[in-house]
Image (cartoon, rainbow, N blue to C red):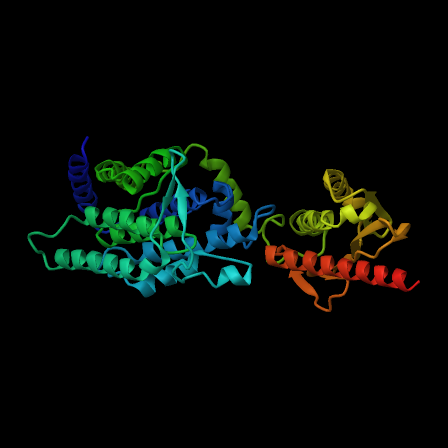
Length: 451
């Protein structure tokens, strides 16, 4: 079936839906919930969000975190759900797109822990971005300097098309054409540092909803063809017809879902019963997931070791290796009250030890501090026995937060248990410790010269 044929079918189905008049509250609630669930899950998972469908439901009913998943993923899913919930409430009506609205939506769906990355949210990109397409070839999006002009042009073109429909001009484009063409033009520009796919689909669906059509989403098994059609248009001058035909099929699927709900048919997928049970548990406040803020516990300690201390240890190891040629040997030490471990460096054996340590936490509860230390020994050509102080990293554990301190730094890094150290913080810690070790080596050499 061609795009035009599918578009005619879309109009026919929409007339049938409209013939039922105002839907009752129960049917509308059922449809909107299914739209939210699938749109949230599939659109975010396309961009690398790790939450499962069940966990997406959990976030939608108000849980602030999902155990074992990055907090960034949870907050971005939560923000995305809030945005689309508002869009679904708007329903059919006049809409105009603006730069301010696009920036506001981007701010609503993005979350960054790192201060530098956070500055990029809702701002046009300042660095070039690209994609490796389905053929393994690199495609560059619009250059940062061109983004303001191209976005201005896209918004003017889209709003002019919307006005033409509102004014019932004879040459006005079809609403579905406007929405899908906006999608293609937007992803060619890729105006933000990240979140471009999600915002493209949000505004495409906003346009569809404002024209009276249901939103669509791309399921997991449909991603490859979606990316291929867009890749052909982006990189090889392909016709948009195949993409339009594909997307029209997705709109038809959403329309059929609406009709099924109106006619009293089941619109949930077969595996949704288990998810509904989990949703009910969440609503009743199941302790394992009803969660406002992590507090001191075995799980909290395990989380910061996995997400902060292990990455920090490997980063420190990488810095220390640059000094290894100066010494005969080096060891790394971990201490947590009665628990201790030593290895030649922060390597796989350290990671394996931490796994065992975390698994034994119930038997070693009430740990309030643990530390990592490095001990390079035997400065070559000077003293084969001396140990040079390479610094120490300490982690203090409190009721609702943990605190990281390290040698020769007056700064304390405080984090709630659900928050990991950022890449920037890890980099600063290991660089400061590297400079500390370098200073101690120089001082030892000078003192030996005097002797």
